[in-house]
Image 1: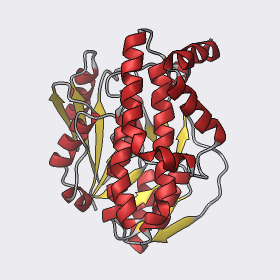
Image 2: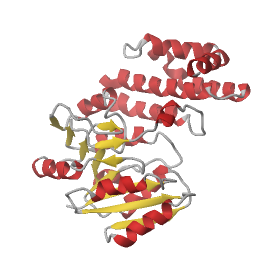
Image 3: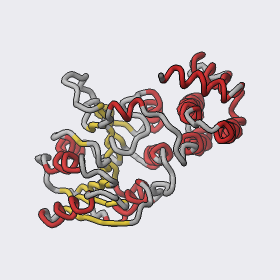
Length: 316
């Protein structure tokens, strides 16, 4: 069985060796690795070319900067494997990730293999258990409620056939939300392991940094796009979908609050309010949305400028 590993690369010269090495460390060797340089301005391109020249199953591609979705879609197009794994260029996988999957797959044919992710290092203790199921509603509820799994594309191994139904939305950030929902929606059998196997690296600077950038509204609109599918196929999860949207909204509002220019801040605030206006009443009646979350939203709605000042004080 061949596994295609797709790694989008953008200005990753300081960390890409660690990411690639985590794949090379796998005891399971029947894989191909696609390194897609998405217009890096540093030495990332030269580094991945070196690996491609040294290993016959590693391929380097170079494109103008188009975003992570376009880089992943390029890898999907080139992939010959039965299954696909995505890794971000500043993260890594555990030494047993591929072996665990192959051992499970021999007994439990599946379209999705889902694992928890860990921050910066793997935990030394966790509860060993698995869930093998075709119950999509059950899996989606886990994604909505477990923060160490959630709607990410990198802590899953996909049957390649799933990408006959969809690709990553290009030009978007927060692109994982819809694609993860569609992955579960089109999957037949899924296996969830409780063993953390994907290591997400985030620096202290990245944790505290919360500034607005173009595309931030995708954190709202991509979650809104999920709601009609939930309403039609998984209506018991509607409150979860609304809570998920509200979480994306409050995250976006915090980024909007960081905008120094008042006119710009008010412009994006109004835009955010318009996006979620159809769901305001459902927010108010949703038991999964906390009073603190509602208070943030109402304060921002009352005065983005006041929210901005409070936000600055709390950050300082």
